[in-house]
Length: 296
Image (cartoon, rainbow, N blue to C red; front, top):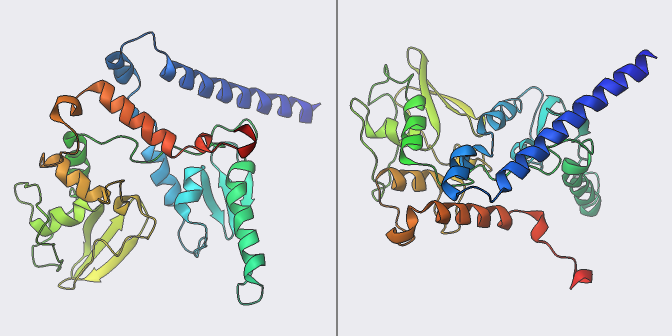
């Protein structure tokens, strides 16, 4: 009886979560209100919970995670957090998924690739059928952020860097990169903050760099060089390229400096244009755009 009661409670919780998720989707797609009201009610940039993503990414660290051909970003997109070696758990339905791969030196490439493909397939199928994370998350950069949002993020990353001197580290800033100006903040600090790094000085003679988007943490001695681009993980969203070949960090700087001009000014500020552009990006990354040949 106790087991049946527990199962019923769990089923009720899953049903409630599924209903809430369906209601969110339906409320977002309603056309009874104007585009301005829909945008105000459900901001597009909040469709992806970036803070939840950052929380999951932080679980992919030694000694529980030593790297795998499946990137932590792919796993985090489907809600999988690292709980122990070669094992991840969904933060929503709490199902477990094994991420172990055979030793590539002891098996054929076909065997290795087959197992790798199996893990990729299980990113979705290993969830409970009612789990809302089963379909994956939308892109982190779903819509272009505003200048205010970008500067707020930069300032938050600079909050602990007041004690850092300009000559505490060396960084190469490309000559074609123009940076926003903040009083009391050097170009070096502004550059690394724009690239997603927060800098602290935990003790004398040492600097600590950290990125919340790929959970990379590096300590260097004061006076040494730091590469804010190549020190990111290869899958870090801060160095993603858009459809124009521009990295996201550089696109952010262009927005702040008001030099981003890819569409006519007549339409660029339109809420209808923003919704259409966001919908196009969602469709481009959706599996629903794949049509079976049998349906043609």
